[in-house]
Amino acid sequence: MVLGEHAELFNTVRWGTLQELKSLVAQGKNIHGILKDSGYYSGRTLLHSACGREGLDVIEYLVSKGLDVNAQDDNGVTPLMIAADAGSSEKVQYLLSKGADPFAKNKSGETLLYYAAGGGLDWFVEDLIAAKIDPNASTQTGWTPLHSAASSGNKNVVEILMSKGADVKAKTNRGYTLIHLAIERHYTDLVQFLIQNGGDVNAKWLDYETAPLHLAVKENQPQIVLLLLTHGALPNIHYSGWGKVTPLHIAVGFNFVECAKILLEHGADPNIKDGLHKESSAELAKRMGHMSDLFKNK
Image (cartoon, rainbow, N blue to C red; front, top):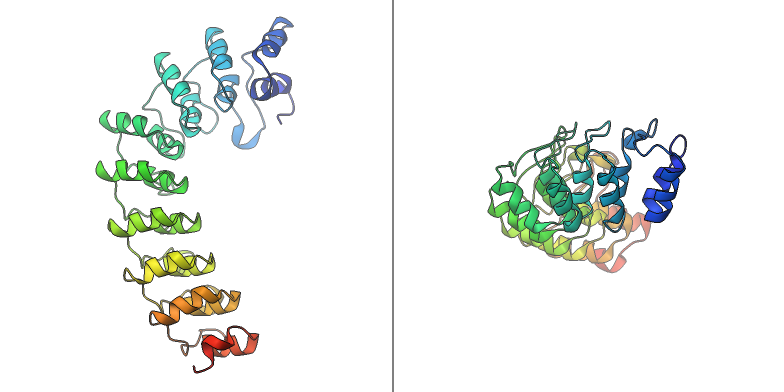
């Protein structure tokens, strides 16, 4: 809920009816008011807010009253970006018909293609690429439209972007790959697609040198663990978090039995010691009373 100046208008636009909005305007409320001191949302107009709600009627009314379809908030975000991120073809098409700029970028370097990819707008993604918007354009932090699509689980958009030249091995400034992202969101089908199309199963995210296998075990995703191992993931790859441990250490520590079983079946060494406590995963299992059946002969 919006507080402060113009709060009544913004809250009505977001959650009220068109008639309620018209009533406020008739009372002299300033329809051109802008949000101030609102953190990430500072600088937004009523049109920005309307693009995040259901329906088109309020948007049409605001545009008819002269609100700028290309207004940028303090972060450079436009109403069209919000509509695309919401996955609304109807709003996107309307705003474009009223002169919204498809080539705008926000201050972080996110293009409209980035928002359309996250919103799952297949047709718009194709149109924007046809209009020469770079499918590999990255933000200040290294995120690309592919990262945006993957984070939302939009596999079809991922396929479209890759068919248009987007790099499946794209990394953020911290080394975060599409596979890391899909694993973190538990998108098994997308992980499989990325692996089959050249994604690096051993790429390390710079935060603690996290490989996809570490993340899959940590997220207790045995199906993804198996996918990675059968496509070349190194079973004993080190993770610098928690004192340079292996995926098996992580599985034992969290008592993720199925993950541990799959790791052992695919070459994980239970006798490798971690870098901090100098303890093997077999010793850890014994100390914690975990998985006695799996480690009884180790």
